[in-house]
Length: 397
Image (tube, rainbow, N blue to C red; front, top):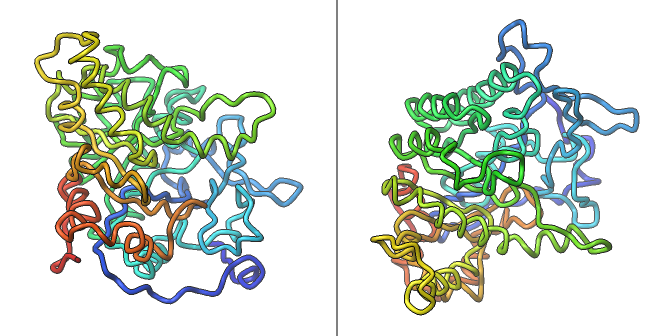
């Protein structure tokens, strides 16, 4: 496995000391970086040569190669621990990232430094956040095999060594709902708690969430208590006017993207058909949620634009949807409108807007005034209940 020791002093800050732990934290939005050997020996022999692989480009950059395409975001903004002056949007090589990005033992050590009890990890860009790259492979049998291989690696190499510290999240096959549902059930039977789906599938060439195409997958999630995780950007970024600063504008609009996706999922009616369905909006913050609740109530009470549901749309939102936040220092005050029981915390390790290694201090700074019982809910209790994950014997504060 690659090492970062040769570039440690040049690229990385000094190794941080473990932080004081004031809060039990379950982070519901972190990422893993797929290691170079992730798919080795995991596909049928007839397909193994076609598995995703890391290749060295002439300019020294490492990229993923799969299905005739190159995926240049090998680390996807995996910049935790880097000196600020060295940070680019994308690390070009594995040794430019902390080993905790791809090695589970190093990840658990980084979680300990940060005072994080447990973590749910999304894929990186080789999957398109949600498995779409594999699902849309030119050879469906190859895409299906790679999807299963990714999940097998996650289960065997990432989750199983530390089951109390990792909440297993999988991907599924999106271009065959029957296969997709079967993979969700296979994973649920071995302990997976969540699956990542595209937040707005019609934007990536799939049927919209209003289409019955998705019924087998959504039914499988509801029947297995598999939480649907909708990560911001999993269906592409916002539209950018020509000449705009795309990175800055895109990051600014994360909340708008989650608002749009959440509104579509609410009005899709899936949560009416499957009242046990659980949907988590990831990395979009909470600043827009109270506004959405107000608007849903307005549509029913004043405008009369509702669809005649027996349940109020705002109540569906509170019953079936959860939200996560890095801090939201201003809009955390809307938590009672949203429902304190619907809010969870994220670290977003190892990305540039993540709070590692100072998540404890960030929570103290922005949420320290909040009553302890609410802090316990938002920092760990809600996530433990949603993902059916154990808490430590002592829960802080």
